[in-house]
Length: 365
Image (cartoon, rainbow, N blue to C red; front, top):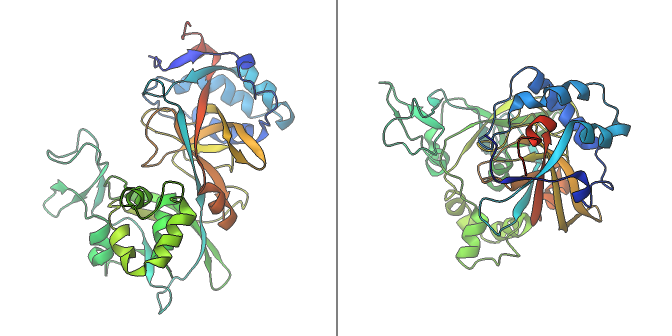
């Protein structure tokens, strides 16, 4: 059943629709189309059925970028998505793929590892989750006797819990860089021999995510306006003796897998199992949304590229802090410039989902 948070709209209701460039969104949707056609997309609890996307997915294979707007208007109809809290608006943040120097062997400079998943880390669900393990956890530690319990958190891992297991993928020269790669979920690593390695999310301990920027604001170290990525990094650089204790307050810890950088223009393969498209892919709450859904975001107070952010995006990723229906994280791109841009995105916006016509007709209002 479709969520009551959706209400009918027409393309004429979207004031910025006609003037927007939909070519990147079409390219991103085409990447998700293969997943729809393979029957490899799970529905979220908003009730948007993956099977309804099949006609659009088939047509996307041959759709021309020059007719992107016509493509979406032919196969979809808009529906406004209201936030779960009445009277509120949707909210946007940004994320990116960091690019940093790294080494495959530790030395005096490169001392801070990124890890592969350990062998005793296992996925859990409602059927396998042991009594006493919070329902939030999707991963647990499997003990030698088969029992499952909470995996050690960031502080315990950084104190040496995984030492000697050979799980290190690469080593960085900054614990802050490693931490922010955990937050972003991926990175491009520049090795000393000229090679480039990509690491992407593989698993996590399961502990809830805690935003260290929020901690710094609550404790009076930064104002809300100062607590963007640049402000947090500046604070960390000015308080080196407090870095470790602050980072460890985010108990969530991420494990990675290796991947090659196949296309410099695209981001990593993310939760929807397709490469992210800069400025066309968003992370959403995966328990609510169906990956591959086009979402038109109207956020006039967010100015990127000297224009208000009014763009069609495709839901292709998720994140621990991305919770609720009208909540999205914009994938900005890769590298330092993308990081500066992503770090200042904290803006309200309106979310209009493009529903396959057959689903849109069910709204009845």
